[in-house]
Image 1 (cartoon, helix red, strand yellow):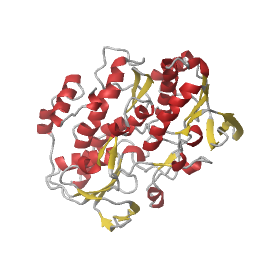
Image 2 (cartoon, rainbow, N blue to C red; image 1 turned 30 degrees about the vertical axis):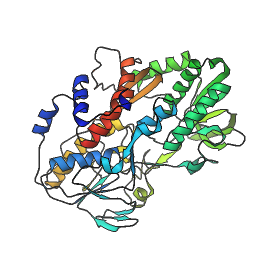
Image 3 (tube, rainbow, N blue to C red; image 1 turned 120 degrees about the horizontal axis):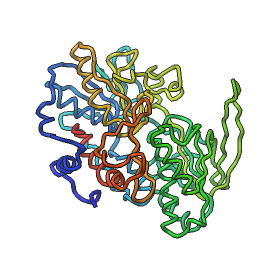
Image 4 (cartoon, helix red, strand yellow; image 1 turned 135 degrees about the vertical axis):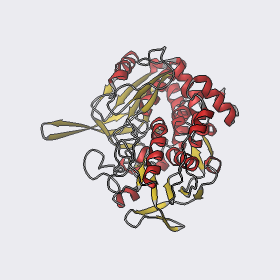
Length: 447
């Protein structure tokens, strides 16, 4: 299996060329533009967006001066957490040492950011003090606000069969709990959350994989599954929603809308929920409690605290509550501080927070940043592309790709199949291709 094998850069590029995901890599490299613009660039965050930006900028600038601030020891392929939780991947399949992922020529400050001063153009770190910049790339990811679910902390994940795959250890505990649940049977409850959150399809994936796993174990008749969403509908991309609703109906999984998780009593195995409805100008909140034997919940999420404290987040509209960074949705440049670009999970833009979205954002953000450094008007535009490969069972994926307008934006070479339905080829892409694409393509600035 590919995820078990050693894949070097040469083999990776051949693989992508064979699948059509990258064509003419060498020609692309030869034609890549360069710039003699100068300036001290500081990148906050060493995840998918931060490291990919560092790689692109280092290649495209003749005299790069790039500092990356990130405290992590490991680089995680987070889309793999769902596959850990369903037994497809092992825990060690989804990470590499951070030092092996940071591009050569980048100064790595292994530290945490505690403050940003966008007026004086400086970043304050926990151990290294103040670091000045001319241009700032804001890519710190997001934070899971576990404490906003009463009765839950990150440390208690897995206790009382309350699980979440939005955590590396939590994904491993979910797989253990899922197997036990399939063996004993009972009530399984799956929820998403009311805030913007990374990989909005993940709660749906683990729900459908759990259902299929019980069928594989011959215990489906022993379990009852329910899905609760804080949204008014299961999914908001019409081209893919029809089939997704059919799947839930076929699998006999009821969908409950406009429901939020308020808290979890892990000792009693009860989840406290709220039905939130708006009638005219009145908001009606109806609390209720459900018993469970297996729970998968999605915590509320927001931008890191220092983003809010620095005044870099939106202060009006739907994105204000999470303090998501106030950038122009097309250029990814901050609307108040033009020497700041932001992308990835922290960016306050109306699209899904996925690594596929990051892959499309990086070259646009990098070229626009270089234009700013050259004193030119940024011309690159991001159309909101995001992709969410919703795993529907062990062997099939509904590959959802769309833009800001929620129209399908199909980029992968599957023009001969109907992407509005789940496909085996998309499963191969999800399980075997996307992880090496991440580690050997995105993080090296090639994809």
